[in-house]
Image (cartoon, rainbow, N blue to C red; front, side, top):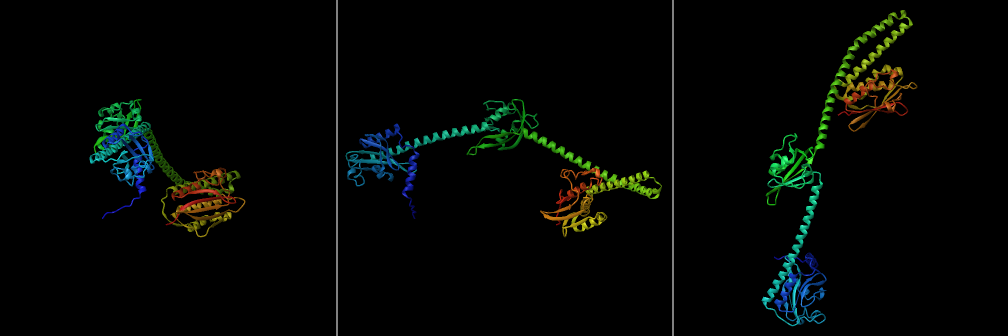
Length: 552
């Protein structure tokens, strides 16, 4: 079964014209070889006229002719246009009697009186008809088989000359492109700051770009034998002292091991500098699989290594400082806890004796002695409060956390119970926003946290209005946001960055606190991986906002 594909003539014609223009022969003078072939064609046919025709979309172009001056004609008037697409060799004994040629202007007298006509189509190796090699006479004539065969041979010779000319042009273009590519590659190699070195299959260097030559202190002679590379180019092991062995050189390793990655070594430059470099290379293979050499790219990493060493040193110093700080903090907190604990009993004793003195001998003391005794008693009480604050701070930082679900409603009930005396004495109002949430944390520490915050809210009250504390909450991503808002004196913005520091106070002269409460709150919040901040409350006062993880 034969499958016939109907290809429109226009598509075939477009392909034929593309092939014709590929040869770049139209409107170009014929060379001596083509002129010789046309002369031989006239001689073989024993006629006075011969021509070499190329036919494009609209015209017939005569490259060279014998017996007349060549030119061009419209394709519609061309005698060759009648049959050249058939791709064969033909002869017409008397064109005036042939129906396909009798009305042609070159036959009927308008432009000529051709009678004998013979031609062979010029067919490319790809099968496209470019034109004809044509012979003709003004008298009827018949060629023999040998003459027709030779005319066909000459047509093949013409196409062979076309192909040779085309191939020569393509080779010239390829050579020019190769030269441009080579120049581009050379420019890239000479421009990049990375050292590039290549060697042939014997290990002898064939390429050394500008960066590598600058390090080596050489100009253009890069053909250094492998065994001379270490000393010629000052190649050393990473210690900068031990010369590299021949087999350890990255270029040689790439040649014999197929590849080398991130090989670090030292180059002692021609200027006497020591630079640290890293080399990556690969073997090169021909299409046949034969190894033809190797290439390596060498990057200067001196500054990077200096930066790394400084960074490592800085990290080590920071790590050591952190360890020392932790040790110092632990010792300090242990010392504070121990001292505070040891002070509790003697202070309690001193406080008891001063109270006895006041109770038993109050009537016997004069005003000045009573004042001194009262001052001593108040000082001891303040000292006891400070010791208690230090103990709370130490426990907040070191007491083991018993993590679990903590209902803040129950915690706040305990807090208000603990602060009942203060609340009643000051007429304070402590309100919560409905049912409080359940959080994840240590119940004891959270109780201490909220107690400190509510106590501060009442303690630092505005003397012109009764204290009011509002405790609210809202849901955040994975955490609860708690707010404790008061209508007290407030904390100026310039003090908020330091108010959580140990012993920090807004007004040290007021002697209303010890500057430890908020530091303790910060420690507790941080142990629960939360945050705490201070803002102004609407209408005056302070809003403490803190985050605590949700339960579950």
